Image (cartoon, rainbow, N blue to C red; front, side, top):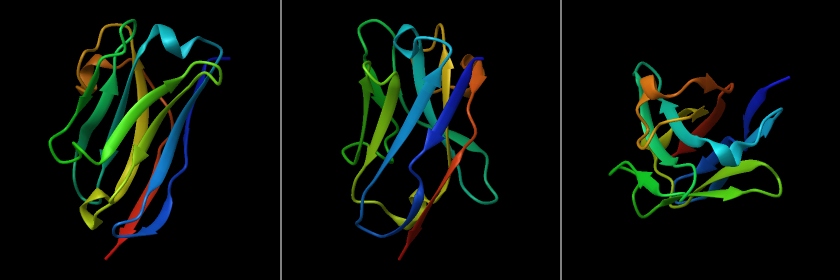
Length: 123
């Protein structure tokens, strides 16, 4: 079975850190671009970060640049999102998704989505 599972969410105070993990099974995640998206309560889903296949170029939304880091762990077949200095506005459900063509975290370019993980940042 092909599966994509996001995990690592939780409740954290502002200024704290969380590390999200996107674990793939049934396929090699290294062959795909991986994007992280989030959906805040009452808002649409937005692209946060992505890492491309091959050269593993990275992209960050301006709102998270300098605070979030996306990386691959090929041995574990996962992609992680390290989130530091979290702010209340980072609260939302975070999703990971894979793509065969994406260079940016644009929702329509992603083909397969995992279930989300909830991140709540208290002030």
